[in-house]
Length: 533
Image (tube, rainbow, N blue to C red; front, top):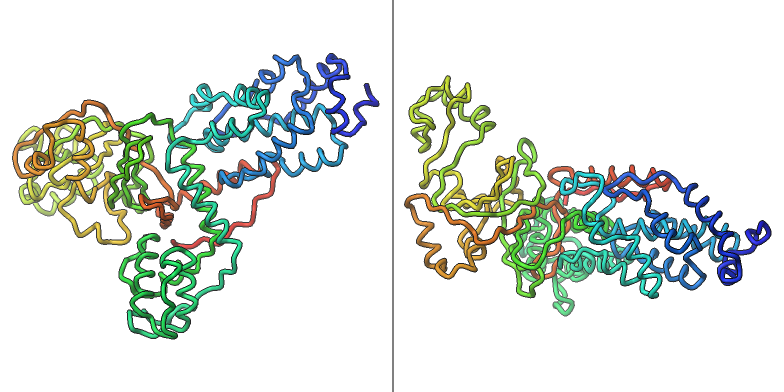
């Protein structure tokens, strides 16, 4: 037996059928016992290896052909925004080729790598706000051990991987965008000259040809567009710049300024990393069945209302979100349960204490001037300070919520609503609220939400939005609302959109992934420099 352990891995695998099974019953358990401690993260892998090997009486699972197939799968990890080094793919490949691997240790290491890969793909590598417990319930519905065992037995490891991928259509779209930007990252990407002053259409720019080629490369101008006049920033270039600005959260003025050129100079490798982080975050989301779904991407200031599993184009609109300085909008999955037309605004305690009470101290008529009232009526400032009374704003033109509120009950009192401050949607940076989300097209969103109720036609919704008494409308079925964070996303037209890291969450996620990588004793890749957009 000792001499057989010195034989190369390939020969051992080929001869596995000739080796008494009890010999592996000693080496495989020893290799399992020698495995490193469980990884930090969203899943508990203790017992996985025993569950995998016990039904086969601890016989080895892999032969040269299946091991090669598994290593091929692991090398495709970059397509998912994952790193093959996290699974020791190169080292395992080298062991397989050299024939100097300890058979039992190689077998267990490859099984471990595949189990980690499937679990990472299913629920992500680090714990998120969406799943705070150590054990993610989704790994009960998708059991990596059973999936690997079944895929290996049927010779269909790729099927196990495909089943692990999030089924949200956005995941496949972001994967496609990632593949595209990986291709861009392989091409030369020289920096464009930054103008000393803003360049408007008809103005002079030093290298219009390079700008034109950059806009074509990024898809902001069609490939068959006519080349520009040398040195002149013309209308066609302005069209491409406007499209680029729209995709990158910049002011869509068509003016070629420092901020726009700096964004044009962000290397595709940095965009690749942003898209990889988005795929990680999409793996955090719970499973959504078919039906209506609302997704709000906070740094992109965008909302999508869609039919999950459907083929129709989603409803898309701009939003205003919580301020990065004081009141970040939290991440969570809520359930929209009802709407209120002409709602009261119940002022949160934090806003009452920090903003309204100081204003009342300076101006006793503040509440009256803003159509506000106390509950109970005519309560004193002392009652408000002591918590014996609260403040609410009456429905009407001054109401902060506008004519409609989309309620999804939660402890943080976060919801979606309209607003009378329409001018805010024209700003490029829209983290301006106290945490709730203001929507650009409330009537369209109401029609989407109430679409299953015949009485709520477009005309009926418009009538309900007019000034009048408060009207509460329960939804026949709650609608999931995902408050999401991604600085790279794909819009309803299939185009990649990039945004600033307004809450610093990309930085935090990078740190968490680096810590996990360190626990695997893998050096972190060299990071591209941070850019504002």
